Image: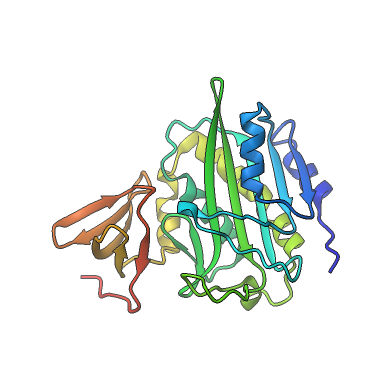
Length: 260
């Protein structure tokens, strides 16, 4: 399948917001995040959108692999946005990105703390944020992977969902054009105001809210939303705990818990 990517249209909308912005479309690469981090460490810190029709070594959070189906281009949308970013507080950035993406895609999509987008109880998209310090500047690389068609892999930790379940005719290039300009604007608002103004918007799509969850460190409890810094609030037998560690993974239990 030949894909027609709207690179020029995206550039025309975004370049007034991000001077020096460029768009690159590659047929194949190991990982868009890895490539932009390589460039940043080599001193290339201009704002760029890098899209790969196929990734051979895509990465997710905590070193997990992100599956990119080799059988058909366009079945997964994988891209990374690299740009200098100077927020007063980086806390909650992945939540702000997820909220922007979910709001752009469909009302039924939910956010699973801290960096996934789910449809019902299945994973539809993931976000990986990395940063590099270049001189006095900090460069952010925001990677996003979205299932347009559910992958065929059977060894995934979470059953996959795909965007065509809610948007049957959607194509990856159209999704990209729809997502990127609002995402740029969301990042610029985050840079200025942080996560605090987004707490209520996140709550409206919070997959875990009121549910029993279990963490990889053994902690269990009922999720009570997130605070102004994006930390997960968890009601445990020991009281209310804040979970913000990037090394902790949180899974919802099968059945929703009563919020009491």
